[in-house]
Length: 349
Ligand SMILES: NC(=O)c1ccc[n+]([C@@H]2O[C@H](COP(=O)([O-])OP(=O)(O)OC[C@H]3O[C@@H](n4cnc5c(N)ncnc54)[C@H](O)[C@@H]3O)[C@@H](O)[C@H]2O)c1
Image (cartoon, rainbow, N blue to C red):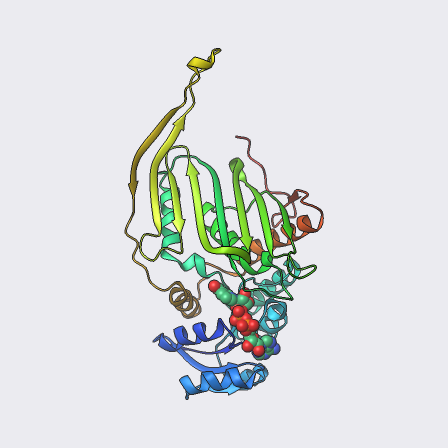
């Protein structure tokens, strides 16, 4: 196979971005698009007249395609992705992979049994700024990681059939798991349904990662400001990744505090604060979705496992599932189970 022929299912807000990127990829041949809405299909057809538009994605199965991309609402991801895999199509599914871990495991098993590529659209794993942050953490520049704070806030977009946890937190969780290289040990979550009864529109997640690294994720559809910021505080330095910034997305602060040795008088109790330089590393930015689409096609062509493979998608779904249980249980701490069904080991500090 020299080129991958594919179709995109779901042409709402996000689907057209996928279509644009696949159309521009030399190794991809975007052949078809499916949506239940004729109006959305006609918009695709106007822009890309060569694309076959259909209201029924099952028409893809007679088109001899190599792959399908699922960009429908999350409640339909499992059913549509499963059907595509059963028709021997490689599949890229938008985030979150599924709405429960059993469904995610089933997709992984089907893909493995049939030798197909299953990838989840964790777009931030293809973001150059996230990659830079991961490198900064891994090369030890920040020292030992103390905690991470992640915020993804805006006014809307409100949804009726999915809460803010499942809508926005997949981004933060996929970033955290990617940059730390581990799944968390446990999660607890609190939230509120301010606008629609039963649909959480704000949520606060408290996660514990191995080596007692704490992470806090705040997601909200009910905030006056658009915020997409991750702060990583280490024992030596601190880094801030601000995705709303156009150019200076990463800043490394040479700031820190040294506790004084033991003293028994208040006068001697003086911390030493360090206020050093702020370094803004140059990050060459390429549209993350373009890299994601390219990676999907290249993974199929080279028979290699994609970075955001089904198992990576499953790990994020497991955290979301546990966080949802916690939300429903008034913020109880929920353990996250690893593949053997045991809790991830909590490493003492
Ligand atoms: N990676 C990202 O940064 C990112 C950003 C936004 C959305 N998303 C994801 O993309 C997916 C779609 O989100 P959206 O905001 O575009 O939603 P949307 O509601 O705007 O669009 C979904 C489209 O799917 C169509 N659809 C539903 N069921 C269908 C079916 N059975 N067959 C064909 N078409 C069907 C709907 O008609 C609609 O046009 C979601 O999984 C979402 O989480 C990802």
